[in-house]
Image (cartoon, rainbow, N blue to C red; front, side, top):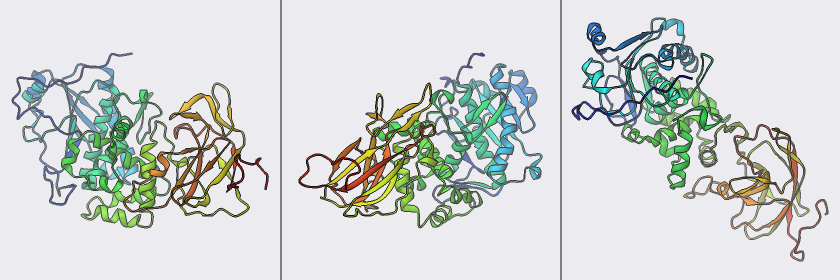
Length: 467
C-alpha cells in the first residue's frame, strides 16, 4: 500500500495577507456576496487566473490532465494524486444526474484545480491569486479550485469533490443557493466511496474507517454532548460568516442527508435544484413542507440525537399521528424488530397508570450466528447503556410550543417483559426495541405488547393474554 502524502503546513515566512486561513469549502461566484442573507450569486464567471507554463515548470509544479480537470500540484507523484483527474471525470456524470443536467450540452466543461503542498512555492508560481479571500481547506471560484493537501487519501478526494460541486453549481446552475444548501449539498455529494477505480458519490459511511478524517458524525455527536443542538429552522438561517465554523459543515451535511434520505421529504428536497437562483429559496422550501414542517423538526431532532454510521433513515421514519385513549379492555399492538420508533395509536393520559406487557422472540443479528432476543433484551451486548433488544417506550405529547423537539424520544422508558407506566404528560405511546439505527437491517420478527389501565389492587402485572 502506498504511503500517505504529507499534509500542507503554514509557512512562517509568507506574509500574513498571503497565508490563506479561515473557512472550509467556501465558494464564491464572481467574488461577490449579494445583500440577500446566506446567498452567494453572480451572473458571469470570474476571470480565471493567468498561468505561466514556463514559470510553473521551472518551479517543479506538475500538471496532470484529464478530460474534465487540469490539476496543478507541487506534490510528488503518488497513485492517490495521479488518479484525481479520473475521480473528477467520474464525478461529472453523477453531478449531471443529480442536478438533472444534460451532460451532452456541456461536453467542453472542465475545471482547473491547484493541490497545495508548500504554500510558498504555489504562491511564487502564481497559482494562488492574492485576491482570494481566506480559506482553510478548500475554495472554489467559478471553475477554479484550490485545496490544501490533507493527511488522508480519502479526504483529498473529498475536498476536490466538495469544491467541484460548488464549481459545477456555480458555472452550470448559476448559483449554489443559501449557505446551508450550498455547503450541505457539497458535503452530501462529496461523501463518497472509491474502490477498484470506481466512484460512488452520495455515500453514507458504514463505519469510521471507511472515510478517514471525514468526521461529520463525530462533529454532531460532540456538539450534542456539549448541548449544542441546531433546529432545522436555525440551519436554514445560517449565513456565509457562519461557515467559519468547521463544525457547522457537519450540521449542513446532516440536514442535507436528512432531507435526501427521508422518504417523506426527499421529493421536496430534490426540487431545490431548480430554485438556486431564487431570492426566496428558503421560503419556497418551507412552503413545500408547510403541512409537514413541525413533523420534520421532531424527526430531525430524533435523527441527529440517534445518528450512527450506516444509519438507515428509511427504518426510522416517524408516524406522529395522535393516538386514541386506551380502550377499557386494553389493546394489543405488534412491534417490528427491524424498525425504529413505532406509533401504537394509543393515547396515554397524564396521571393514569398503565400496564405494559410484552412477549415474542425476534432476531437481532445474523453474524456469526443468529442472535435471538425476547423483550427483556440480551445481556451479552449493550447499546446506549441498555441491553440490546430490550423493549423501550416513549410518550410523545405532540408539538408543544417552546419544548425541545424530539425530547420524548431522547429519554426512553425501559419496558422489557413488562412495566407500569404513569406518564406526566398526556401523549401517544411509541415503542421500539433497543438497537442502533445502523444495525436494524439484519433484524427480523415481531413482538406483541399489551397495554391496559392498571388495576389499582394488583401489585404485579397479570399474565399476558388475560382479560
